[in-house]
Structure formats: structure tokens, C-alpha cells
Image 1 (cartoon, helix red, strand yellow):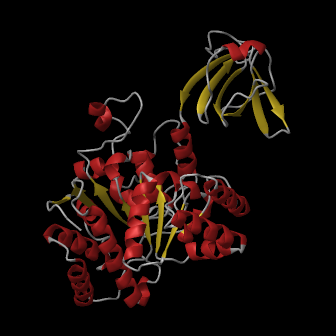
Image 2 (image 1 turned 180 degrees about the horizontal axis):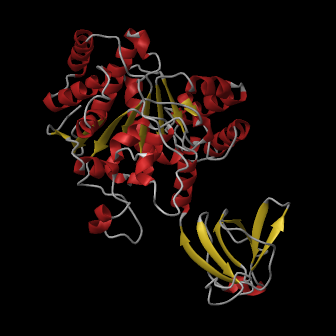
Amino acid sequence: KNARPSQQKSVETFLKLPPDWQEKTFDSQVGDVWILSETPNFDGKNKSDFFLIAQGTGHGPAKSGMLAIEPLSSMRKPMFGLYAIHSVNLRMQFELMEMLRALPTNGAPLLSTIVGATRPHSLRGIKGLTVKRTFPEKKSSILDSSLSWTEIQEIGEEVIKRFRLNEDQVEVLWRCASWLVRPLQELDLSTRRDRECVLVHGVFGSGKSYLLVALVIFLTTCADRDPSLEKLRIFICAATNVAVDRLLESLLKDNFEDFIRVGSLKRISSKILPYSVSGSAGTDKKDAHKEAIRDCKAMLRSKDLTREEEEVLHKELRALKEGRAAERLQRLKECRVVGATCAACNFSVLDDLIFPILFLDESGQLIEPISIVPVARFQCERLLCCGDPNQLPPTLKGMKEDKLDTTLYKTLYSRLRTLGAKPTMLRTQCIL
């Protein structure tokens, strides 16, 4: 009670808590929902009553009792003596809505394959519904290769021999090779879904990461030998920074350096730092550069660094001060492979980039809305979901594991399998 919103500089809104707020033991986080009302019953029935739903935009409150919020509904004017309910945290949902709102208007090719295309005429007659956006079906593909199947097979055999892939890994490689053969638009939806969306099921130690590295080498080799595949690019995405870095480090060991890692420098492996671009949601390129320098300096203050890590960080700091960040930003637009966590997919440095191929690692740990973001944002045409859906389900507060498949929090892997996509099981324990 007695909280009030106040405005400052006409761009920020604050909730001013009463003097005794410090007696209340609570901590507001970014994305916390606040419900404000002039009346204690919060019914909002009287249009003259003040009623506001807002989200917290910072951690707090400050010692002064000021808490930054962003109104989610219209606000007439600053009010005093309001009742406030501190509700659930919906940060992930808010971020997802922002990313979905910013989807490219020229289409998300794979979405119609995953969920089936909704025709605008089928929505006519539904009262109160307005169709704001439709995604036209893509007639051609960036992945339409001029290589013959014989040439693709030759490259595939080279990679199979070089990486000594087992029978199941070879099956996945040929399924991905079919992405480069003739347009798939003529196939029926269920067949297209199985061709365009490859599922790989493997337990720990079955060689999933090793297989993904081999697939990167295979697809980029095809692109290097075929001018018509000039725009073939691969986005590697996972739930954790460790998983993304593990794949990119494996590529480095194989002398593949045509990649950029996007994320917060503090969370990136030191071996990958020379190939990294810093950035966060809502920051411009100048702010991202300053943030990267601050992160490097903060990391150098750590007492747990090895000598090798310290040398890498000093080298990275010099590179940032010499303007290498601008070179990497340019490379980000051109390199064959980019790696980031799903949480980093909305970083501004990735705006307007297109990746026809998406590798989704740890897909059994990613709820469907998060998985859909890179699929739609980067206009992906082909998808490989890799993981063990039976081992590590998504971690969700207050959600029982046996209820996941009946909500929007099921995994994309699970949805595709239900819709008929056939997983390839990696049955061999690999010792590399």
C-alpha cells in the first residue's frame, strides 16, 4: 500500500515505495510483474480507477525506495497512495515476446514446416481477429546447390573417412546432405518436415558434438566448392555457454577458424575469445565495445586465472583497444559459422543476419518458445536438433516434469517427434 509511480525525464517510470519498505524483505528482479491499483480489490471495473500492470526493469529497490518499472498498459498520470502486488517473474516470456515481435517481415521459411502454414482465408469470420502479418511461402532456397549428387557423395565420403564416422553418424550426414539436393517444396508436409528437420538422439558420450563438427566441415566444404552456395551459413545454438564453446573449440582443433562467437566475454571460454564479439540485448555497437573492455579488465582481476588464461586476456584487451572488434563485427556478417546461446539470439549485433542452417544442441533442455526464436529470427531453412530428450528435460520453476508435454513448455524436439520426424539414434559409445 501507498506505493506510487513517478516519472523522470519522461522516458523512465519509477515505483516509489513507502518509507517502511525496508521492513519488507523482498528483492525485485528484472521481469518481475507489478500490479498497481487505486483500490485494494484490484478489479479494475471502474474505468475512472487507476489500474496498471508493469514489469520491473532493474534490480532493487534502491535505498531511496525507487524501483524502475515499465508500464505494460496505458498510464494516465503519476498517482499516489496506490496498492501494489509484487507478482511472478516473466522475464523470459517478455524477452520472447520482444524477439517474436521483431521477426523479419519477409518470412520464416521453416516455421510453416514445423507448425503447418495457416492460410489467412481460414481465419476470416473469427470475430475480433485481425491478421497483421502473413509469411509468404519461399519459392527458392539459399541451399539450392548446383553440385551433382555424385559430387556431394564424394565430399561426404571424404568427411566420413577423415572423421571415421560410425554407421549412425553416417546416416545423419546423408540426411543433412539431402538438404542440398533439389527443392523440397513439392513434397507433402510430413515428408518435408522429416527432410528439413533432422533429429539426433544420443546419450552422453555417443559422439553428438563430434558429429556436429563433422557436419560443419561437410557442409562448408560443399559451399566452398559450389559458388551457388555462397550464402550457406550455419548458426550453432545451445542452452549453455559451455556447450557452444565445446563445439567451437572442437572446430579449432580441426583447424577450422571461419567462425564468430557471440555473447558476454565473461561467459566465453578463453580459447574462443580471439573469435568473439561482445554484445547484449538492447546495446548498440559502441556500448558493446565498452562493455567488452570492462569485462576483460574485470576478468583480469580474478585470482583464479592460469598464466595461459592471463596471457589470452591481455592479448584480447590489446586487440579490443586496437579496434579489432570492428574487424570481427565485419567478419560476423561474412563467416560461415556463428555460435551463441539461445538467450543471446536477440543481441543487436545479430540484427538482419540470415542463417539457412541451424544446429540446435542440447535441444532436450530447451523449451519450444526459446527454440523457435533462432529458427524464426535467422530465417532458417534447415534444422538439426541434437540431444537426449529422455535425460535432461527443461528446468522450470513450479512445473511438474510429467506435465511438460501438455503445455507450451514442451521441447521443439518433442513436438517434431510427435509430428512424425524420425530421430536417428546414436547407438555407439565413442572414445575419442
